[in-house]
Length: 386
Image (tube, rainbow, N blue to C red; front, side, top):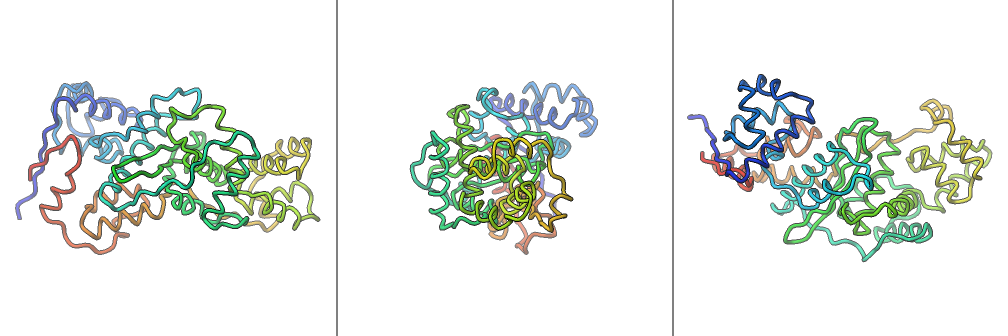
């Protein structure tokens, strides 16, 4: 059988944007133009001209460069989601962000948009017409209202990722480093509707990851997903919503009372495990609910608990949302597209971001040349010829 050769032309107006993405991906990968050139067997001058948008780029070259820089092909050729572009241009003073987080949000948002356009994901209407709470009491009431909409009682939420999906928010836990930003979210719109997309730091502690996702859920539910519309004053109120959504008053009080014979610190540890909250969130919520005093909160906050503190009390912590977590419905949509021959194996592995390997994929029919043509359809910068 003759090998399939794919060639493409990149319109001149797209070369500059493509060059900027190449330079950004190279910078994020910590590589020089010289090291990239050596890795793909090109002259350094060729990389310089590519990044300036002054040299034509062939598909095989782009495939090689993308692999070296650790980015999928779609990152370089898909148009960005408008909300992700708005986020990048938002004032940094109002947002705990980073270039890497912005790139991950932009890429995940584009992938979600692609699945929406293929009909593999369905838009989810926003529930209610909520606005950002103005007081902590409003935040608590909003948390209770949204819990009620899903039929949740006051007990701990066992699977926060699936809960967020029910509200139309899809999640990716990226590797952003222990000291990296917590996360962010944007709105993804297509003709038939939209969904929310959140990227959180999957390298942070488990409690911090849950608080971050609950916080981003608040942004989404309150129509505050566009960072350019967010204001700094909203953040404390959305944090208040997040902690009440994860740890409702009655449920926290129940756990607190159950361990009434324990020292205050141990009771706080029990609350943290029950609701899988970070230590700072635990003691803040206990103070919010008047279960501890200001002095007790300050004292508890001086020493961060270690794993042995929980194990000493026979408390087990259920971990979730660690890198590379993806919302289950997003993964299911990718596999649905794969088994229907709508998405190629290479693309579904890109979309799954390490959650799936080639051996994990279900059986699918072999792809024809027409399938290969379709896999490139929709990449704005490419006109494939097979």
